Length: 147
Image (cartoon, rainbow, N blue to C red):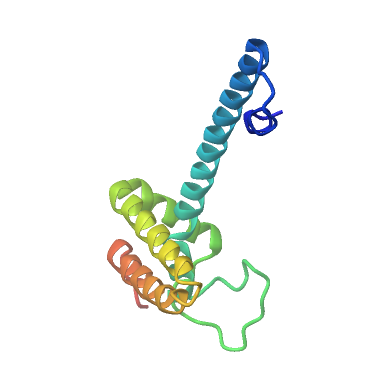
């Protein structure tokens, strides 16, 4: 039962019922805060794993043997694999926590604006974020040694 039910039906609310509603609402709000905190932890984890690893995997040759793929013309340059890219990304976040937190807020805010503009804003926001993410990666990670 909700308070709106009692008010709309003009029934008298006893103090015990009101107290129970109050306790249930407080528990629901605490549950909401807990869920928000868990969502924040997952968002930080996703940012930490992906902020540098995706551009790095696009920029550098991938170790074909590590992922069981046959390449017709193997690359002589030093290669990386996914776990190394993820470790590099997490290390970059640990070394630059303020910059990466600011980047996460910029991404979240930009995507929110893109969603508010009936998804048409995403046609502008996503390419700009992708280009910006590339430049962030180039500033944070040293270029691969050519060899």
